[in-house]
Amino acid sequence: MRIEIRPAFDEAVMRSQLPTRKAAAKLINLLQAMDLVQIWQHPGLNFEKLQGMIEPVSGEQLYSLRVTGSARAISCLLKGPTIVLVTHHTQHDNAYKK
Image 1 (tube, rainbow, N blue to C red):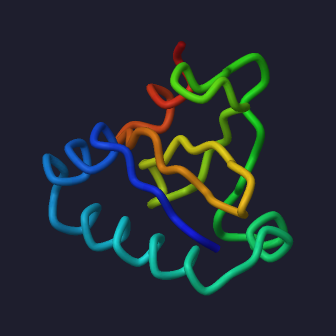
Image 2: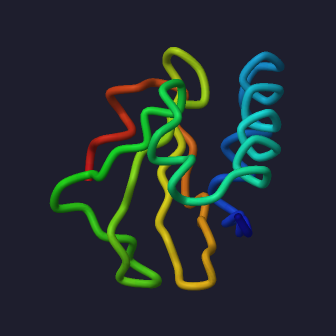
């Protein structure tokens, strides 16, 4: 899987605590080694569609990925296949607010 990282994701990760930064790096390495079917099926990633949420730049559907027990990455999919890491939220509930 090809990965594109938006500045908002990168900046939020860099502001996070070290364990969360390490988990984000681990997530990126994991995603690079997988295809889309494996990402959908991976039990630890909890890759799920966010109903009614669209990425403003590309207009693509948004999805959530687990970074840690409380941290989430918001992403979208582009043809290629490419996963775009759009934003990072250290608090699970904040990730789902529009």
